[in-house]
Length: 261
Image (tube, rainbow, N blue to C red; front, side, top):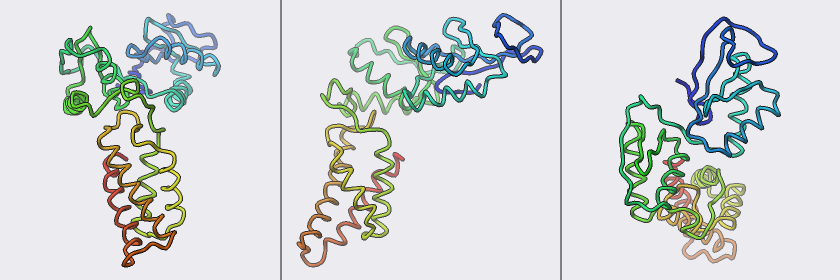
C-alpha cells in the first residue's frame, strides 16, 4: 500500500477505460482510492478545491477519495503540491495494521494536541479513539521519545511557549553553512549566511516539533560563532585564536545539526 501526502492509496481493478465524465460506480473503470480518514474537514476542502481547479475528475466515498486511474499521476502531483504548501498531512493507521496503544486520558487536551502535531510532522501512522492513541508498531520508539519530551517540558505547542516557530528549512541551511565554514573559515558566503540566520532566529522559537532544549544549544553555538566573527572584524583577535574559534565552533554546530538534516 502506497502513501501519498499522508494518504493511503489502493487501486480497484476492472476493465481499463479512459472516461471523460467520471462515474465512481462504473465497474468498467479502473479506480484509485486514497484513504484520507486522518485528514480534517479543512484539508478535505482544500484538496477538493485543488482537484477541481486542476480539472481532475474525482468523487468522495466518505473520507476516501476516488479518482480514475487515468488521472492518478495528476492527482499525485496535486497531493505533492499541497504537501509543500499546507502540509505535512497526517498519516492514518489501518484498522488491520499492527499497532501499539497508549492510554492518555490523564493528559491535558493541549498535550494531546502537541503530540498529534509532532506525529503529523514526523509522518507517524496513528489514530485516536477518544483519549486512546494507537500508533504503528514500528513507530513505538519514536512515539515514546515524543511522550518523554512532552512530559519533560521539552516539546510544547506555540500557545504554551508564547512564541511561533522558526521557518521550515533553517536547520538544513544552518548545517550547510556551518559545515562549509568548518572546512574553510574564510568562506564569505557561509559566514554571511550564518550572520543572517543569527539575526533572523530566536532562541525561544525552535523549528516545529524540535526540542526547545536542543534548539537553545544550537542557538548558543551559533551566537558563539557570530561573536568570534565580530571579534575578528573589530581586530580583537587575542593570541590569534578567533580564526580557529570560527572554524571549531562551526564544526561543533554542524555536528549538532547533522542528525536532524
